[in-house]
Length: 160
Image (tube, rainbow, N blue to C red):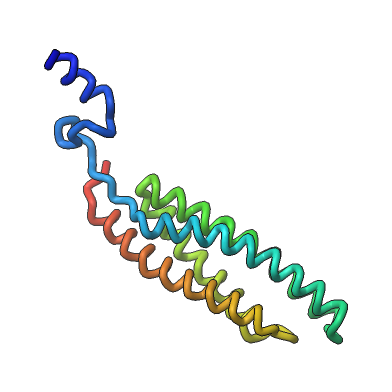
């Protein structure tokens, strides 16, 4: 009976001893992964809210047509960059790859610049946009700190 339990222990990787198998410890950051997940959902809501606010601005406010087109194109660029950033961050954290996580942190810079643009530099900035972008910048700040910490942890580990 003890022999069967011993074999079952090695058959279930989540119950086995990592040192006995020669596996490396899990270094992925759970708080960073939670932030990536929450930021993905938040950005989806942010994107929909921005589109609706652009429709509102285009109909109600005397928004110049060229500026409106520029803001929508920048929002689409922002969406693409944010998707790439979250993808590389997600995969870099889960696969414990410093380079992918570094790419995510590097893409964070243009995303933050675009968020500041929507926060301060648009033709018309609504209060809702101000709040949404301020929250997004808080996400970015936390992800920057946790991302840099996780990159340093991955870099110091002896993973082959």
